[in-house]
Image 1: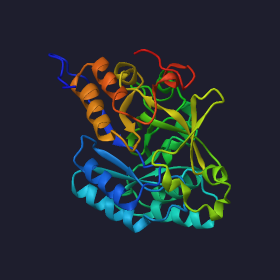
Image 2 (image 1 turned 90 degrees about the horizontal axis):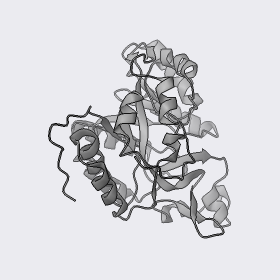
Image 3 (image 1 turned 120 degrees about the horizontal axis):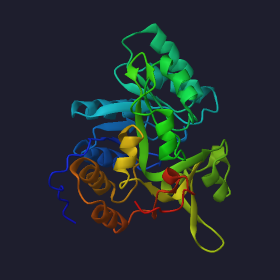
Length: 323
């Protein structure tokens, strides 16, 4: 499909963020992916291991070097912390991420919030942090409680409908903090991370213990697909994380996202077709390209799952509601 901007259409510009890599890809594949992202329309990249600390082929120093390279190529880089911190080693790693100067940090859980709030109080020069999608900010009072700690951006929980997002942080009356109005970044593409557990589901599937998992999740570039007894794709196992089998896709929701105060969309990496996904989101949201054509191309890309948007419309997440 050749994407052409509609004459006379000048939609509000949405920022484009590449979310953290949720899977364990080989080191070279990861490096190659981010080399392509560096030349993409994305203006922001979220980096770091957010699922399992045993995925240690890429260490903190490697992520930091990658962050420095991407920043040198004009990208805004955010360092993310894990969504589930289960022990002292993970807490030490979290503190190291939070204390790194020069980059904003995304808080994956409440322990990161505590560290970031202390750092913000100690230095006015600290960059505002991002409230991650797993911090359960479901209402305006919750966001108002976190904003004064130094938050500059909020990623709503994935199952929060667009009209609910509008109630929490409306464009006409946004929640404010020391950094000013808190921006809203919406998870707009990718398999949805639904839950985390101290147990490793991938290891359990292979009849292995978590501490002797043989790193089996390296074999699943987009997670391990589960089906119902009727053979329908249902969930995906990704180590300690459970994801949706389908891909959340809000490419046709620009008007509703604008009304909800969304200024930035987050696209979660997958192993096939992701760079084209980025191009299509930019063309539709920022170039006025036809939604129907872009959606048809997305459906034909061979992505690892069907396209759905039910949560955005207060429907079951696995449903696809026409835009």
